[in-house]
Length: 175
Image 1 (tube, one colour):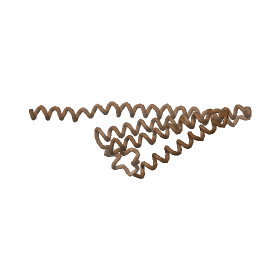
Image 2 (spheres, one colour):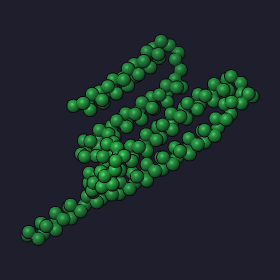
Image 3 (cartoon, helix red, strand yellow):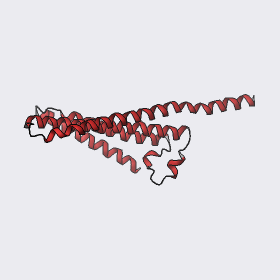
Image 4 (cartoon, one colour):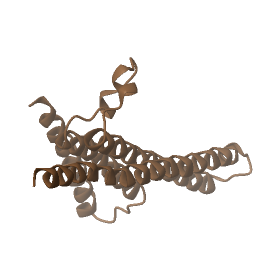
């Protein structure tokens, strides 16, 4: 019976390696997001030469500026999503498989990438997801028409809620 228990516990312990599928997939997804976002950024920058064109009238220039700002917000959003996926992959690996020796020995290693518990991973992911939500709010705010004072009041309320969420997320760090 003792031998059967040892075999079961060994199999149970080794089952943690199933997490590697999530780690690899998350890492590949992060790389894909960084690649896609970088290509978007390069294409956006290549179109900026049009902004200085004297042939561009004021309305077209304002439209190009607005579209460029929207693209910048999308680019920030893409990089943040890639960062979430990267933090998730590193965190899951460190929690379930093994500590990353190179990260612990590195002088330039960031504490953001060092995960010590599941709550630590959730907290770091929550902060990056909060930033993604703020960027999305900004992205929608760019195109938001203000037709009435109530629209402006709702917008101000959204900004106040963002400020409150940032305050609360940082207040949680102090405890």
